[in-house]
Image 1 (cartoon, one colour):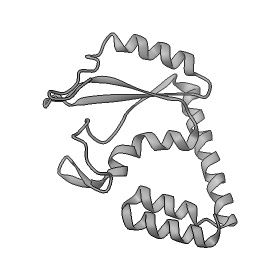
Image 2: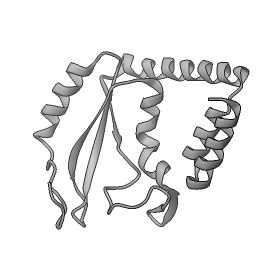
Image 3: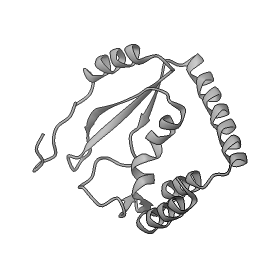
Image 4: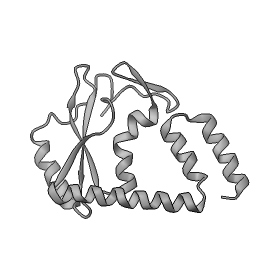
Length: 156
């Protein structure tokens, strides 16, 4: 983007989205070369640490989001998580975005429902190039879960 386009994008995006995820995106768009190289170095160090984890373990089981599924909302809305408010992107993306940064394969599958009947997901993360094993493990694990059931009033 040209400097003028970048400035316009940052102003428009910043006026519509709030919170740490939006701030991070804006900061990333406005990086200079020195900060960019430092960021890439930190990313590579993080990837190396995560790979050390996968030297010991086959998979990492993680939540998908900070809460079970919820009725659709605008992405500008804050979400209540156990009595605390979080911006939409943090509440929904904090557990999945990290693997977008590292490039590790991740699979999300239905685990069951909460007491209100809303779906709860499970994220399974694997080492680089472990996709076949990831799918095989998820298939085996699916036999132990409740699977997906659409909440009352929703279509499958």
